[in-house]
Amino acid sequence: MSTPLKFLDRFGAVLFATFACLISVSAQAPDLVLHSGKVVTVDQRHGTVQALAARGGRILAVGTTDEIRKLIGAGTKVINLRGRTAIPGFIEGHGHFTGVGNATLILDLSKVDNWDQVVDIVAEAAKRAAPGEWILGRGWHQEKWSKQPAGNVKGFPPHDSISAATPNNPVALTHASGHASFFNQKAMQMAGVDSNTKSPDGGEIIKNAKGEPIGVFSETAAGLVSRARSSSGLRSSPDSRRQKLRRQIDLAVEECLSKGVTSFQDAGSSFATIDVYRELAERGELGVRLWVMIRTSNRDLEQNLPNYRMINAGDHFLTVRALKRSIDGALGSRGAWLLEPYSDEPQSSGLETASVASVTRMAELGARHGFQVCVHAIGDRANREVLDIYEKVWANRHNGPALRWRIEHVQHLHRDDIPRFAQMGVIASMQGVHCTSDAPYVPPRLGEHRAEEGAYVWQKLLKSGAVVTNGTDAPVEDVDPLASYYASVTRKGKSGVAFYPDQAMSRMEALYSYTMACAYAAFEEDSKGSLTPGKLADIVILSKDILTVPEAEILETQVLYTIVGGKVVYDASN
Image 1 (cartoon, rainbow, N blue to C red):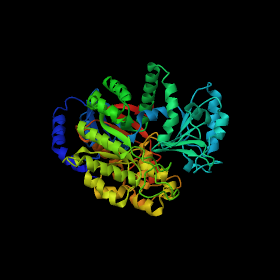
Image 2 (image 1 turned 45 degrees about the vertical axis):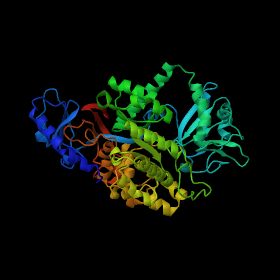
Image 3 (image 1 turned 135 degrees about the vertical axis):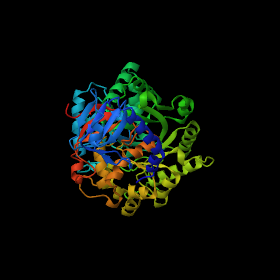
């Protein structure tokens, strides 16, 4: 089990004192009682019990059904588990909160089988769109199609077929990874991009043999066209933009609660978005507890950071205490920054999407203002550079490991860097479902040796003593924790073949990675992550026991209730 278990012992005396105090005033009936089931506390001292009581938004007591039922009062909401399983609320360890909501408002291209289907979907949308209206979509991934598109370059589709179907509408379709975008001819014309346009630092304009852009732009290059869309969006009123943002937030809350996510670690929001989060949290209207990374330029950070560090605002619904930057791209788009060239594209080693100097400066600002630092790094070169940056910034500090800085994704490591996470106290913020989603193309990208040695090496990290968290990177993947949990314990994708199964987590390790490990990674282990008396009463009730059922049944498991602060906020029966 991971390092943060030690913190349960540290807080043990306080929590037991809290438990005794609460029981002594049990004349005040609990607000909520769960009984006659399996309550998996994820606390070694309590283990699995039969029942739980909560009052005032906190866990009051755990124990046997007989012990807890004695506390029931006239106003207590009682849920008979009937043998079903309750666990701590899932904590999404890395996702994009407003992106989850926005994904429901645009074309979903995540389930298409080939490029022709994408063309058909966009063509139908164009029939409904007003002239000049942007057609937006997300989720396509060329490596997951049953056939390659005609005229492809490096596997990427050319714009011709979609451009012919959308002469009057600009089109922007984001890659599933979020690290590349497709634009049609209309969009490129609006942005003034043509065969003479050069790729910017940290990005690539994919061009055909004639030197013409095919419509696919990776990493920073996508900004050349997306800025044209942003500029057109600025013509909408502030109220309209705010209403759209509020709609995205509401949809994200609804999606998360329906899938048992009670806390969400938001991997990059602007100051303007955080202002809205804070307003909603203070009004009690946020719904899901957010822990937010700020993503903006170093200049903006220098000007605004002192005003944006907040802990447990809105009764533990909003914490802003981290900074985010991406130093490389993704394996799917060959933007991950590697120590050696790609096996399937030997002329490329990926992209440095933000300079080492820029990331170092952000880390210095984080250290100065008391913010955690979180850097997206997927390739082995990117991970090594970030670890080196952290060591450099910590050179004159003695509390580096106590800062709990993080690397987001950690998908491919050189063997020499695996032990550095535990040695340095750096959090490996990983996503189980990325492993099985990416598995078909990882060996071609890296070669079998590098893939086996360093790709998604959960067990190597855990055994070294590192803290490994879990999540989905939604909307890159579905925010569903059960799908990522299944991937974590089986490493099996659609084919049913396990991807280096020796690196799979045990059932309890995977649950821990989605609860206590995520809480620890956010300095929240004293209030979240386990069903321990005194902690927040954030609970999920499942239709099956994911710790014991046959692995195929994990994906059949349903979220029956989601409880936040002792209140039922999602009931599958309604």
